Length: 120
Image (tube, rainbow, N blue to C red; front, side, top):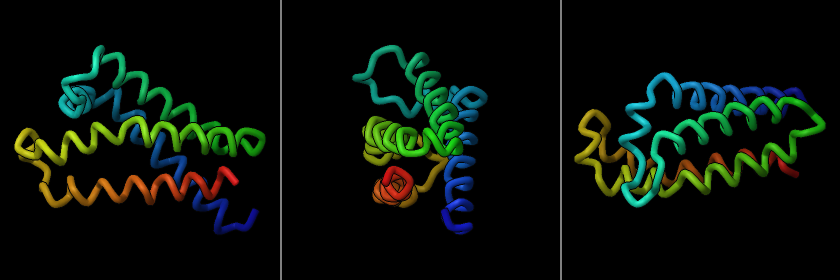
C-alpha cells in the first residue's frame, strides 16, 4: 500500500473514531438528528457510535480492512436518512447553516467512495 493510501486510511479511520466517540459524549445532539419514525433513538445513537468506532479500528488492521470498509459503506447508507431528516428540517438545527446541511448529503457519497477505495 502506498504511503498516501495508508495516510488516507488513517485519516478516514480517525474521522470515524472521533464521530463515534461524539455519539457518546454529545448524545443529546445525535438524539435530535434521529428521524421520528425510527424506534429506540438512544440505543440507535449508541449502536451507530459503537459501530463507527469498531469499524474504524478494524479498518486499520490489514486483515480486516476490506470487511471494515464494506461495513462503513453500509453504515453510511444506514445513517443517510438522518442526514436527509436534518436537511429537510433545518429549522430544528438553527445552529447549523441549512446550506451546510444540504451540502452534507453529497458528501455521504464522497465518504462512501473513500471507504470503497479500501474495500477493493
